[in-house]
Length: 467
Figure 1 (cartoon, rainbow, N blue to C red):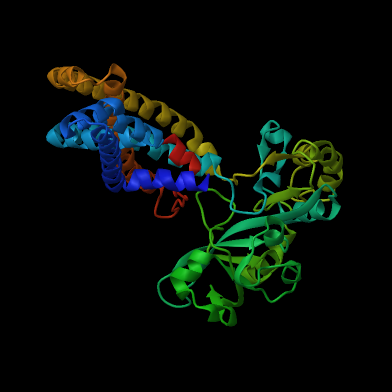
Figure 2 (cartoon, rainbow, N blue to C red; figure 1 turned 180 degrees about the vertical axis):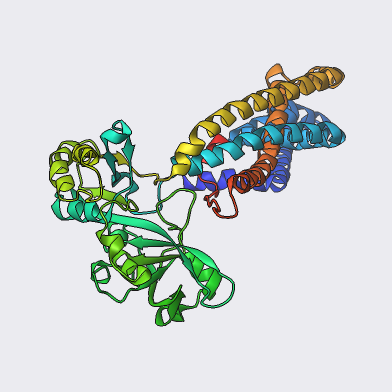
């Protein structure tokens, strides 16, 4: 089998050498047969004629030998590609118009799909994202509609009473000022619980990450940098773990850098610096944020235990809800509000693709845009079909000549399909470039000066398959 494979490769890539060897072998065979006839009394000329007749025609034998190599289809395809390139090169205006028409249609579709993929479909770059669920709160005041905001007292109650999950975490958004003096320079931050990185399975690029020992009341506070922030502001220097970072009027020792690719859990946003939840005491100058029962600033996620589906925790959370909310009643609410508060229940929702208000904001517009650009692609294909029909009418004489020379209908159809495939591939390649530019422009369009949208627009197998 290995020798056969080598032979086929040689036939494919050293065709000229094998053709020369084939000519020499056939000539030697004819000469050998002719010598036999000469010895039997025939003239040299008659002996050669009989030897060729006995062989059955040199050209026919050559074709049979080529077919026996098993690479005829590949060779014919290469011929079709070369011929197609020559024909397209003879009409560059048609080729350019066809490629640009396809590129615009494909580019628009791929641009919108890449946004849809980044916002709605792409898994979080963490360990086993399919096991992640987000904890939701359902209040009568909201008509039972779920929301994901929690107070720290509720988080601590859920964390201490749950037995459904292999890990839980909470986080809240923040904005820190890097500039101690002069013009403010704000960066995006996170306050995270001690099990945040462990539950997600995120590893450090250098140093270590925040753990339970860092998230304790009265702690001095530590900082973890995102990989991109480390590269942009510290040049990737590993000595950063022995330094401190000033955020506002407080400094924090940098203990590590998160792994590359992890930018947080909120789609459309990325963090620069993470501090433990307990560090709010340092930032605020008091523990009010941790104690307040009506300050809704945290989000909660959990990792399911193996074999448990997102629907399994529902009954258990409903059973725990009265106990949790009776222990965290906001004292400054009116009696009616407190009564509704006690009716609040908890549930879970899958969170493998992250969480963000950007999903709800962009889901419907993206679906509408997908339908619109789909129509654009159909129009582009219709225009290209018209161009191809007009071009085929102009090539009738060429195709008739090839039929007269022995080309079959199947071979002509394959040639035309090869040319169409070449145009499609060229259009797709140019369309990918257009899609990249288009997606970046759309992200800039939805971004504002105070809220820069960050989306991972790198291509993956879904995007390439869609293209």
